[in-house]
Amino acid sequence: MTAAQRRKLTAAFAIAGITLGAAACSSSSDTGSATGGGALSYDRVRSTALDLSKDKSSTCPFGLDFAKAASGAGITGTVAPAVTDGRSVTGNTGEGVPAQPWPSGDTSHPPTMTEMPAVPPNAEITCSYTVGASTVDVELMAVPKNDYGISMMLPAIARAGLLSVDQLSRFSADRPAVGQTKLTPGGGRAAVARIALHGDGDLVLMLDQNTTGQAAQDPALAGEPLRKAAEALAGQLKG
Image (cartoon, rainbow, N blue to C red):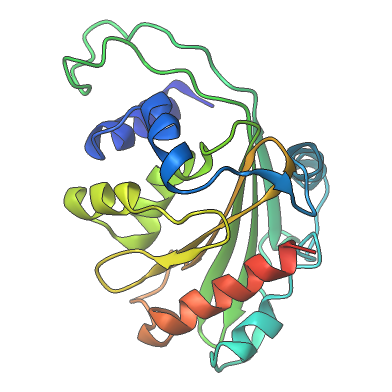
């Protein structure tokens, strides 16, 4: 994770009125622990993300079948891998960063946040598809610490959902519990699910439109159909 990416992550925490540690502590009693007997472990997600960072692939891992999920949710349009540079699936891993002082002269943080918070290791996998003329992403984020996944994804959730500061804060406060799938506020442009991992850790799935290079979002790929498709994908990961 670069310094710029870390500042962006911390800024999202500050916007939502939380710190990473506080989010985990507050959510552990409200939204359910991510510890459990899920089909996937953090280590398996991480090793898969590492492989995908090196090898080109157009097959979404873990048996994820977006075409089936979309059809069941009533989403119409031909589904196909969105191939770029010979791949439609990408992986990325982060090693985690300990808490450290803010760069000299940095004024983007609240005065009460005296240092950049520690960031745990993480693994990300993105599977991209075309649906008619639109592009959608299935994004996975896994972390080895319970109840940290949503907090780690806040910048991506804000981007995908086109969320205001208030909307991001409300979504963070009312984040999905393990086994739940929720839409982002303000039009439901992204759907976010939490899935139990085998052992410790947190796994988050987000389904959203990737509007890079597109004139506008497709309203048919938002709201309840999007939530149902994300819920079906989460169900596929439960084994």
